[in-house]
Image 1 (cartoon, rainbow, N blue to C red):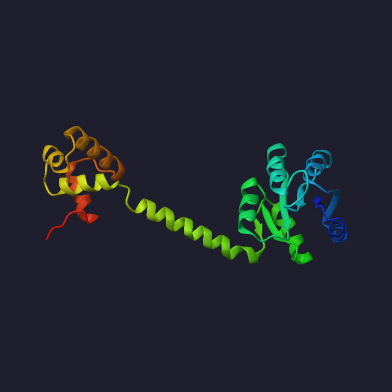
Image 2 (cartoon, one colour):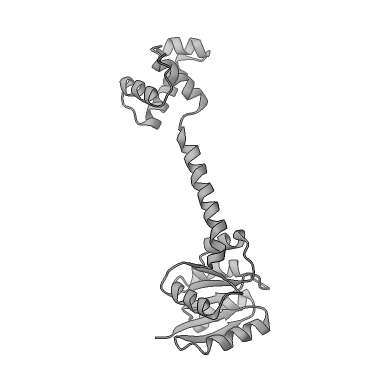
Length: 216
């Protein structure tokens, strides 16, 4: 069966060229053309496309907002963004809005058809040239998460843990840190919850393993 495709772009010449291209593809049935975001929503409701191929920058309603509304109102419809912009912010916002694909207008006709087929099957498709900056962002995010989770304890909790590991009791730690014994007990409970320890012996072993106790 042919894939029912709706096109959306505010540049008439480009839209007509895209239409002429897709009319030659036997597996694609062109069901409509929109020239702004609001018209995209109207035609999506009326023409029931399976895939909407649209630009990001359009009048009345841009492609990102239109994508979000399409995904809310017509969740079965797939959206493929076809844009001249390779800014990773636009790519990320488009994907967050619900687009399954993002390709550049400089792509070949073969790539466009491949992207349409991919999103039709519910797969993500991104132009290869936009992948490096997205991968870099992803790796930075992973590193940030790793850094933030490397030490689950606050500075004060680490101070309390070090003193417990040295053998001081709650009253002695309170005097050493100039805080109340109740505060020390609260820190101890939080530390044990965070690191998954059920006893002071477990907590001491954790402190040694993680380098909080100087055995020299």
